[in-house]
Length: 317
Image 1 (spheres, helix red, strand yellow):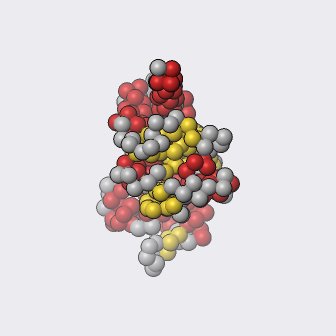
Image 2: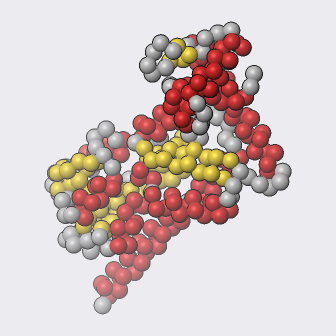
Image 3: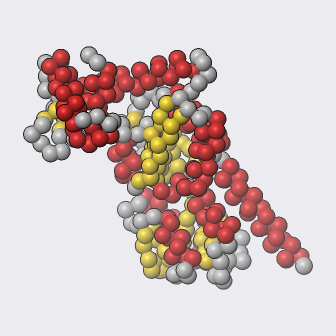
């Protein structure tokens, strides 16, 4: 049984299409079809139901796919372990992340990672949370990065960060000079909310209800970037993870205000298929992500301390 045929089968199973799989791995559609047919003849079972669109795995195909993924994971790990003997870590890392994980900070992190490991190719795509889970389950990526990660079934989670939730207001808002505020003080304020299907929106709703706060939701968006643009335009205020507004704070278009008396945070986690064996390249990336991506949090804290010092100088003058 050729390992290449096993790889082709896994790609067809993930894409549920011979043509899409062939395009993804740069072979002809007929070659992809022949590879799967060769496996079926070797095993004496039908792996794929070709009469459906999109393609579906047969029960035998589902069992075979699970075993194939484990085999390929193990082979890649052994292959890259051999490379480390020469201290030359290479390979490909496929990552799916939510948009608000931080485009600028992630790009900066990847740039620094590449300087240390130039032989590692990183393929990062941004998606909605449900799509991130699908990419992980379909083995289209090595791991995903998202907020409020859920663990269970075929998904395992590695905790990563806890991002403080802050009140975000336009730079010219009456509250913009404040460094702290009680949640009750935003009662009745025009509010820019995230879409109701997002976990962060449901969590914020619960937090506000617990504090007896009702806001006037004027606009709803399904991503943080559009929420920030609406706040900048003066359409209302919002509650967002602090690292997501650092850039706007530096530019002076938004102000982030800490919330008093509560500890609201957005957890971020690294999710992967249960029992998946990371390649050496992926292991290095996750290790660095957990230990060196904290620079943005430090920058946030430094920014707050600077603002507090400025506030103290103003009050004493």
